[in-house]
Image (cartoon, helix red, strand yellow):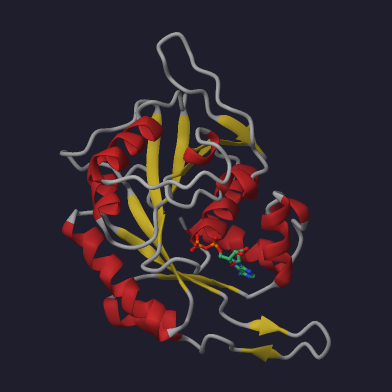
Length: 260
Ligand code: ADP
């Protein structure tokens, strides 16, 4: 586990927060936010930790929908925003601060100030772990986020598909440039188990993320199947770890949480 690993000097700590882990992906749409949500809830509900979830995907914040939170955060006397608690997790997202459906078209400096507001401008209280749903890709926002926050480590989410795995390599290199340890790779949408014949189909290819992890000397953390229920639960705002705690999928997410 990474707990207690945050020791890098340059970046600033968030007071009261023991460890910050980034959930990242080289590409959009691979299930980074879904993984971040279920990981955070599993850490809180299954591992009994005090957990925060920061939606740093400021261009496409999806945490409010996935965690069913819509209220505007209150502000404390010292002008800090109070995170909204859902399923035992303290959440903060740009999606709570802007009008729904409003396009978020920010340029560099505004991105930085938004990220500042979402991190140091929040009254996180005491947390064992803060899970950060990073913006997809390896651009300015990701780099400055990684430099500003004292990340204990990064978890990389990918599908087994080659094009996604090429971007995983880019992501891994970016984190190593800023001295953030890679906790490992989670393979999402690894296979689809037919509800009728119970056979597995490898829709995005088979074993790709495992091989990439091996090639790069990284931990392979686990695989999450492609499962309609995961998507339905996200859209309804009740993570599958909550709605079907005994399912194989929930077990898979809990396994990821235990390895982190
Ligand atoms: P990202 O954060 O990488 O852009 P999301 O977590 O938003 O990706 O997921 C993209 C879409 O895929 C969403 O509609 C989500 O509900 C769906 N999804 C993610 N993981 C799975 C999965 N394992 N099975 C089925 N649907 C999934």
